[in-house]
Amino acid sequence: MFDLFYKLTGSEIVSGVIISLLPLFLFILPFALFAVLLERKVSAHMQDRLGPMRVGYHGIFQTIADILKLIQKEDIVAKDNDKFLFNLAPIIVFTGSYAAFAVIPFSSYFIGSNINLGIFYIVAITSLAVVGILMAGWASNNKYSLLGSMRSVAQIISYEIPTILVILSIVMITGTMNLNTLSEMQTGYFWNWLIFGGPGLSLTKFLLIPFMFIGFLIIYISTLAEVNRTPFDIPEAESELVSGYHTEYSGMKFAMFFLSEYANMFAVSAIVVALFLGGYQSPVGYLGDLFNAPWLIPIEQFFWFTVKGVSFVFVQMWLRWTLPRLRVDQLMTTSWKYLIPIAFFNLIIIGIITLL
Amino acid sequence: MKEYFGNIFTALYTIFVGMKITFKHLFVPSVTIQYPTVKPQLPERERNRLYVNIDDCIGCDQCARACPVSCITIETVKALPGEDLGKTSNGKKKALWIPSFQIDFAKCCYCQLCVFPCPTECIYMTDVYEFSELERGNLIYNFSTLTLEEKQEKRDNLAKFNAEKEAEKLKAASAPKPEIKKDQQEEK
Image (cartoon, rainbow over all chains, first blue to last red):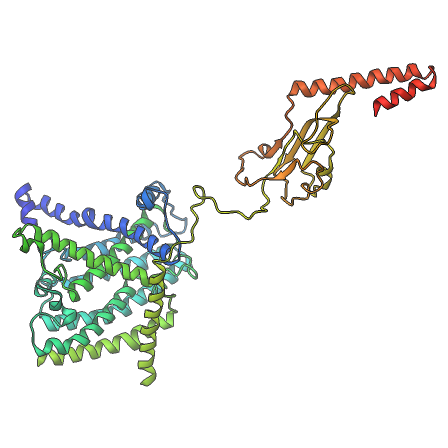
């Protein structure tokens, strides 16, 4: 992709800028617009309501209208806010979630940066959001905001551990941290996906299957907690903390928090998909192979990746409208007493199996 | 240890039960009524905005007296002996002009108490409930059909008639008795 733009423009800087902005305008913004609408529609239909119905057919342009409204809104900064940190926080939070998209392989031809430390980079860079959230809570000079951000930081740090342990077990099996290589390994049909023990037909594959399922569940739960979604949404618990760390934000700064929340939702789904569900690989083979049209394959890969990612985002929404919020102590119990020990045992067992 | 795994099992099991229920509801038809385009079905005897069929009104003032919040104001002018105001739909003879029949819907409490006393059933509840206004004054509805000139004319007519009668009375004070009787009958 970079080479293509390099040939077209003849400048490394220009093509670099283009390739770094491409996922934002091609994917994150449309996805956020779509996901906000999907969230509202899913929540509405799960509660036997209709959701937005006025703007366009069944309200499909509702989020565009909302964005237009947010742009026009006054940007309120309260008197006692720490102005510098207050303005910086949404940018940092958004940077953290946007930077994760740099290494996500949308298809074999479209990956921002094909670095060997892919998954490690994601783990590192998504932690940047913690700083932004704490900054937002502190700079707001509001007890609810500060409480929310402190909870959020405690939560994200706790849940990073089971996530990393599961990622570690995957790295042990595959021997690579490169997300593109990881996706390429799981090529072929869906039984080659890592959730079904990875490619090949050996004894280890079948031994791995139950532990991969456990790992999948753990990483799904803990990434859900990392992006502060219900049932782990205690940082913004609207019934107790008004709105957590974005209580004091309005207008486009609030929109940035919102955008980064939805970008994060897709980012963690994408990580789960890339690690366990074959990344951009099709579960049933490609039409491009069938019709002998190689140019079709990247498009299909992009399609499959988006479908898998969005379906996991849908499950996140589904969970949100099913489960009540956890208490702070329950949240910590879930992480430290359940997820982390299980993830550890899972890691050890997978390690032993891979040694076989 | 048993409790530990029991907890895990219960957590996962209950989550799946909950998810099954919410997923089912995804396909349940919604109960929302799209209000301004689709109006909800109101009950048969709903109480909403009043309407006065002024052609049937005999100006008896019973509704105004029944109103607990005094939102109905009726002004009546007697008809002259020669004038024929016609009959109401249930056969009552009308004897009063009604220059003003005002209902203030800002005050109205929609109790329907004014509807029952009406002898000609000319005041009744309709099914209209969308009549919000930006100015409070616009909520005062005037049901009288007479124009301003007509109202003035009726008032003047009556005043003139009364003045004539007064004059006649003064004249009759010296005249013989039967003539006064005749006058009184006419007045009735």
